[in-house]
Image 1 (cartoon, rainbow, N blue to C red):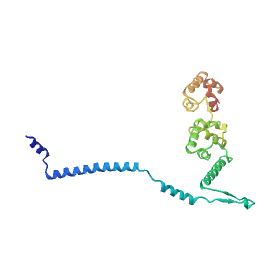
Image 2: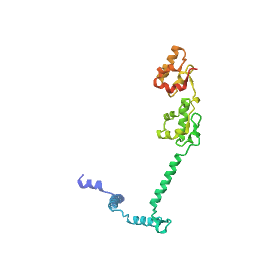
Image 3: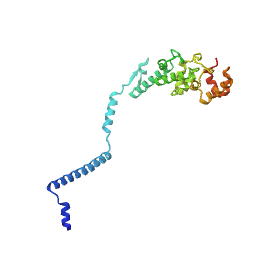
Image 4: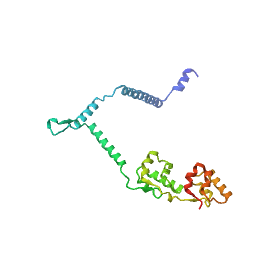
Length: 241
């Protein structure tokens, strides 16, 4: 087959095929042309600076029309009267200062009621400025795990209570240590004692080894050597009677 015949074989199209090819070619040109046109328009918009002069004029006009007129304060002698220019900016500053003063005075207001930490529920705790929904629930849950609070300072151990917030709420709280639930060290089970937040597995195991050896603990102070520095905290929750 000659080159001419091969050419006719591959490029000999019917009228409908030629129309389809022409249509696709036109669509391709339109697509390419649109792409470059949009790119050109975008570059032109970026290059052209934005004129804010009209906007600035409108702002100046608005401020001029809404500026508070100067007030004249008269003294006993009219000749000694003084003019004070009171602009919107100065007015805003005074308004903010009044709001700030009222907020400070609110913080210094004496508390009407002191809340007992060992009997307060979440609703009572939320009435304290600085304690929200989640924090009140955490406090009650931690109190239940401990068996009660022997000191208000223990609230520092509650997750989410920041030091600055603790200082604010501390004067509003009272803690009666006699309400703490004691654990009888001679009758408690290993599992129950292990659940206390102030004891770990190693310490509980040491306590039970001592019990097995001596059969009974007659004085809580004997645990001081077993528990070390943690004894001062856990001693408030243990009893041998």
